[in-house]
Amino acid sequence: MAVHIPELDPYGPSIRVPDRVDVRLTRRVQSVVDHREFQRLRRVRQLGPTHLVYPGAVHSRFEHSLGVYGQVSRFLVSLQRHPVFASSLSEADLLTVLMAGLLHDVGHYPFAHSLEALHRRGQETPRHERLGADIIRERLGAVLSRELKVEPERVARLIEKKPREQPTRIDRLLGTLISGAIDADKLDYLERDSVHLGVPYGTSFDAGRLVAALTLNEAEDAIAIAAPGKVSAEQFVFSRYLMFSEAYWHHAVRGASAMVEAALFDHVRRLPTATPVAPALLGLLLTRSDDELLADLRRDAPAGSVSARLLDGLTGDERRLHKRLVTYSRAYAEPEKREAYERLYRLDGAALDRVTDKMARAIAKATGRVVRQGDVLVDTPPHDKDRAESIDVRYLGVSGQGSYPLQELSAVVQGVHADFVQVVKKIRVFVSFELAAACRERRPELETALLEVVLG
Image (cartoon, rainbow, N blue to C red; front, side, top):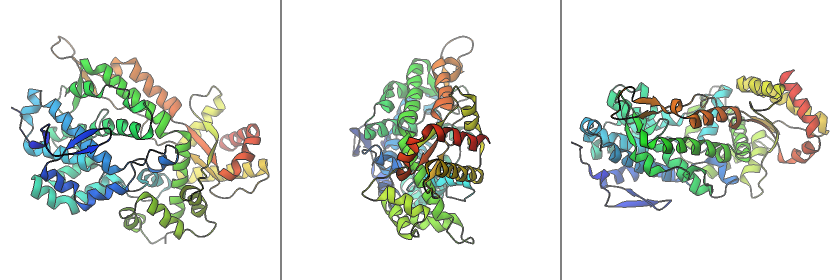
């Protein structure tokens, strides 16, 4: 028999979030939402500098976190229709995964993904999952223990560790509600980001049917999709592909993100060599909004420095974003362009900086213009999405094999992943707003020169 908790009741006190969704909040959950560590997320934008390209993208991690909490509750209501799930989970299990959904981004800070990318440049920067787990253990533990009777360490572990790293079958199962091929986090951000950006891509799947089709895999340690939900799962995968292709990794968004990353790196490398990077930044990261952080960095930037010039284009009333000059991908017909992609993709941060400096010299020679450090940026995509995440499709009550990974059943999913790796994961060379016109005039010459830099 399913355990009843008031958090899963359909009626009662709630908070309204876009797009016209009521998220049910009981008194004990409200005590967590009202905590200053959660309220801080109101000042952290969900999509960083994306609002410079899509003006509506000013929604917050606070809104998204409430949405994920609501999605976890819907997942649980759907899964409780299955006897094994309903009989396996205690009240503590249900509240633990609800809190993991609510707090999964509590360690986020302004431009976290840009700062985390500095790992490629050899900098020790704070990972938001690790930071969130620490905040739960050290600052939210008392309210979680007192009000909800859940173990803070267990909530923290669900957020910090992958499902396969959880110590028990139940926690591996609960972890897949938060982090997996189809999970509450992705379900919320695809729909929410789509609404705020004003694009249709993240809402082009049947969310209701997908949630209704949730079941357990054969090992009963992960969520799966019952066969009637297969098409909805394919639509979900395709929607996520479209959001990365057309929104998250839109060339202008990537250009703005590359500027933020370069400005942050310039700030970090000016810190005293004996100062650990993460502690030195945490005071700023956990107390500032996106705009406040950039304003602080701009005030600290020496006149004429890389960060000063980049931040001038991001923070002032005069928007001056770097412009795309050259694009490389694995999909090009020309073998030399494909080889250029592979070489750039494999470079570590130091080697990429050296190549970027050579590109800057080639651009200066071709255009006759002065090219300063930071005027040329090479944006390479993260390496963590090369492998397809999988979820099982269950054919219940059939003879023979009754479970298959979604990608084995679906040419659509196979094609989406192949296209994502081949086409969507582009490498782009950006030049400063001031250089863009001169570079456009000599683009054919520059395309050849930059290929020689990469392949030479």
